[in-house]
Image (cartoon, rainbow, N blue to C red; front, side):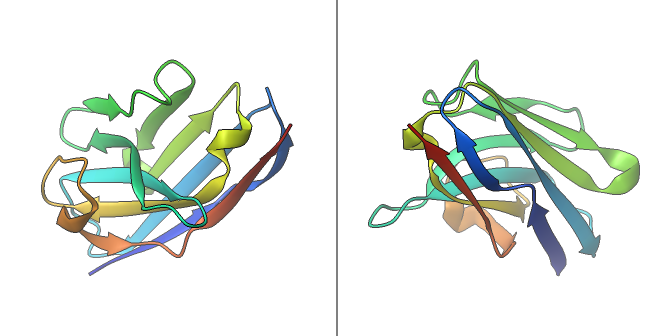
Length: 121
């Protein structure tokens, strides 16, 4: 089982930036790490994912061009750089590890506890 810990969330004004981190420990081998978010009253939605083998990335249309996912293999850490933040980006952000490079939460086996991102207008 992979143990994931997110950090870096906080309160920021619209147009600002935050950098989220996801540190993995335990059985750290996984095919892909993804970021998801969930706002109150809404379903968990895909944000971005990165494949460990080749760094291939995929983004949700809503964050494309504003968010960047990256990895540090030596530190088993994945980052999510979020720029030009909007109030609609407000949510609890989770990182997850899985064996399949997909956007579907069901296929990710390990999840962190989440970090809150709040964007004020």
